[in-house]
Every structure is written in structure tokens, then in C-alpha cells.
Length: 299
Image 1 (cartoon, rainbow, N blue to C red):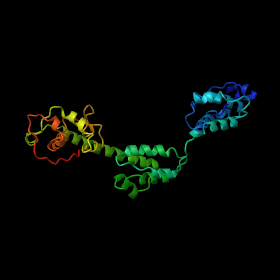
Image 2: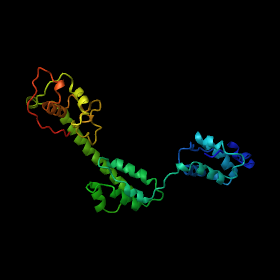
Image 3: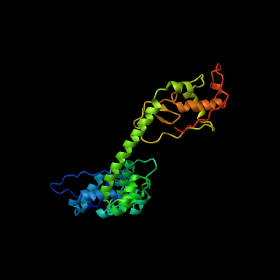
Image 4: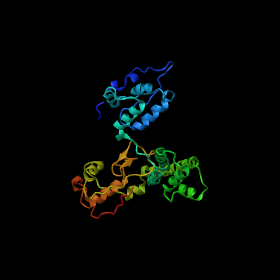
């Protein structure tokens, strides 16, 4: 770091006093961990009425620094700064490693909707990346947004076959599709929740009998899940906010019910028992089944 203090100004700068009626503007403070050019841009726009008063521009700039940046400012050597342009140069040079990488419109074409990302989240991410591009052409942004969608998505078909839209109209249309997607997913999850939580029927109880163990089956899962032959089902996917988050199942890796009460885990555990992998947990009074049953662990 350059060995440079408050006494760094020339005598003219040190004697600079705010003009009559001057009110200290509100500045965003700079700590030394962000883009120095952005800070200078904000400072100049805030001090636009005094930009011709070079000495005042230098003196007030010190009040916009804090932390590490203020410590750096205090190390500026005497008589080293003669103008605000010089101060700006030294400041940006000191914090050059924090310069933001400028984006071009080509960057937008690298933004692709992830398979499990909602339209709402995709729009939010796209807007954030577009905001990093100065003077981005709207037609290019519209094309990039459309190309980032899966070709099978109804919004993509709407955009590719419909009339040309402004970017604002495209965002409005995407919002409608987001609401439709969320409502559809919500209904699907509600149906799945009811199916998982329904009480067993007499037919279920008659056809599903499980081996008794000396410990809770959730405890058995904790011991078996790190075995190389053990298979966990894929995690739950989709819109999960409507599930009971006070209950967690370690087998399907998601909320909605407890591990001990999950039918798929009971079925898979029965298969492992038939293969002789759970003998240490068996109730000795229970005879182990002799034939394994094939069980799918897809949730």
C-alpha cells in the first residue's frame, strides 16, 4: 500500500472553507472493499454544485471515507495532492483491485434458466445481470431472455410465435406465467401431501406387514446411510412451502412427515432385512423373511 495523511493537501486545500449556505450532502461511505470508480461517480454527482471548487471537493472527499479507506487517506504525505483530479487518480490506483468487471450485452446470452428454477427467480436473476450492462439494447435483452428459456416451456413458445414485445411487456407476461406455474405446482404438492399423509386403509394394513426391530427405524437409517450399498432416493423437488416443515424425513431428505412414519423407508428397510443387512437390529422373537421384495425408492 502506498505510504501516504490528512496533511496530504496543499496549503490552499487545507485553507478551503465551505461557501456560505453550504449544507453537507448525504454520502455513501467508502470502506475500501468496493469499486472506487462507483464511489467517485456518486461523490461527483452529489457535489455537482461545487465541482468548480477544487479545494472544497478535495476536503469534503475525506468525509466520505471510513475504516481502512480513512486510514489510507491519513497516510497521504504532505503536499502530495494539488487537485481533485490528482486525488481521484491516487484513490482509484490504491483500490484498483476492487474495480468492477464491465459487462457487455453478450453476457446476457450466457444466462440460462436452470431446470428447477422458477420463472420468477429466472426473471429476477436476468434483471440483476442486465442492470450491470450500461445502455443495453432492449431488443437484444428480449432475445437473450427468450433464448435462456427451455424450448418446451410455454412462455418460450409464446415469445417465439407471438408478436414482438417490449422488455417491460415481456416481464409482465413472464410474471403471469410465474403465477400460473406456482399455482399448478401448489396444487400438485397439495395432492402429494394428502396422499403421503392419508391414513392406511384396511387393505394397506393387510398387505403391508413389516419386521419388528429393537430400535426405532429412524435410528437404523442413521447407521446404514453411509454404507456403500445404501441407496437414498433423490431429494424432494418442486414447490415445498405448503408441506409440514415441523416434520423432517431423513430418507427422502425433505419435510412433510417423520422418518419413522415414511412408507417408502419401511419398504426399503424390509428389502434390506431380507438381504440380511439388518440382523443386528432384529427382534430375536421375529423370524426374518426368506424372500426379498423388489422396492423402488423413487419418492
